Image (cartoon, rainbow, N blue to C red):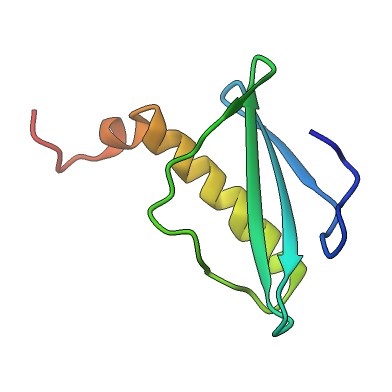
Length: 93
């Protein structure tokens, strides 16, 4: 994962989370809104996260987009690994 941003990107925020290496940066669209881009690796290999949609949400500041991206990455990794099911007291046993 490169720490140098591409054109129109912000510097990357990094997070280690349950053995995953997460990198989040924000890109700006033509309406001056920001969107988080999440990249994840584990053991040196890229990890694909299942997203239900490829658009939005968009944020007014880079900081908001990156903070939301880090939260989203944790959520998607928890869902991917079944951690959300373990935390849900309403799930059938």
